[in-house]
Length: 133
Image (cartoon, rainbow, N blue to C red; front, side, top):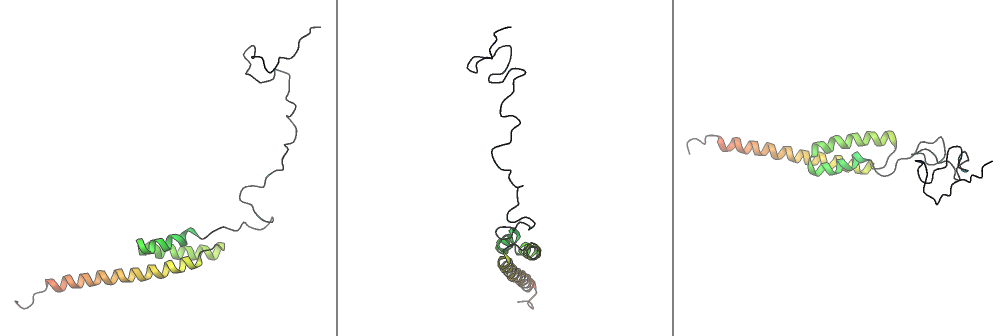
């Protein structure tokens, strides 16, 4: 019999073994045991099981509808209508944001069209011949 003792974890490894790893045949005592914590539910599941997770915060398209009302009103109209449909289907918040985005987008689009028509009418009126004057 040989009096071979296992190597100390404080000694450098021998024969190409990484430091702190057990030699062949030795096992870690914690391997194969259950983890000390309870399993976590899958990501995105909150509340009682069987109930779909409720979305948090307002609909993103409703916010974009309100922003685009001031930047590019026709895009605000499209985003507002899409937001209204999504809010009806998913129950998200932001119905008032989408409504105000739609109202402002339609108002600014109408004002923009009136301004363009007025500008075109003014340009045509300025280029007409005023009977030789």
